[in-house]
Length: 374
Image (tube, rainbow, N blue to C red):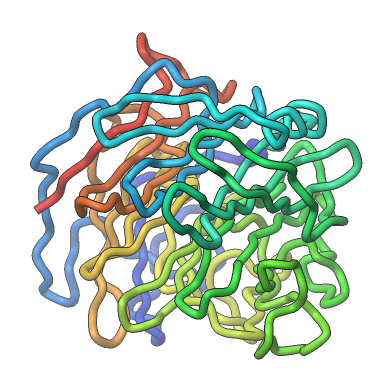
């Protein structure tokens, strides 16, 4: 994320395919037709929820970034700066991942700015063995790597997708396996804004590939990994039970976004930030000081977004025909929030992000939090 002009707090907008509200008095630097609606309003009438439990699972982590659960209940966590992996059991017991793949990461990854060892996804698993995908910043590019985890030993890694532009900011990095079994990869514009609109560039995109890195069958262009374009820096991916695909995206000066992703959809960057004619409109937006939405998780009742600059967990309730009004949880309680995932027990595991150089670390930071809402 780059530094951004402060914008007026307390402005949240929700759209459900059709614009529900037009701003008559939005932030001074917002587009004239940008949506705006006070936080807490509920056009759907859906009630909010409360956080009923928050506990530390594990602390003293150095810039944790990605989180994915293995079938046995352990979580694989990436450490951005040290290029390490740890396994975290439900009771908080942590094991460092070793092996040739871990050694390769230490040699390959070149942390800097927002780059480093970023996303992780479980491609397949059987018994104590799991195939992992990892998003890493190397000397010349960002790339997706694949390797097999046996217990706590990571085997040799091989690149399955290379040549993703790297920069100090906007490196993308989120990985997720969709309901269709294919791997989805988010990339940032790496500071080259026009590349987000270039269908031949990997930058500013959501990519959809096979486990071997080939364009997945059914992509809009059969020869291309591009699934959607016109993104500034997507940081979260998730799917609702009905198959809807959601993505969270950092804005520049005015609006952060929650988008409903359509194959081949153009989300407007850099021509548009937030709502704009001719592009797919976001289903919810926030002023940039309220969100900076990073990781994203979807349950059967809501989308949850981890807010960095906003220092809160946003809950966006799912409705039959769209989404309801966002609700802020954990506001200011734990500092910057980097990632959120649904744990096997149905709770939310949340990574804090206070040790990344932009936060104010507290004793014991960074942490994995177990959050229960109801």
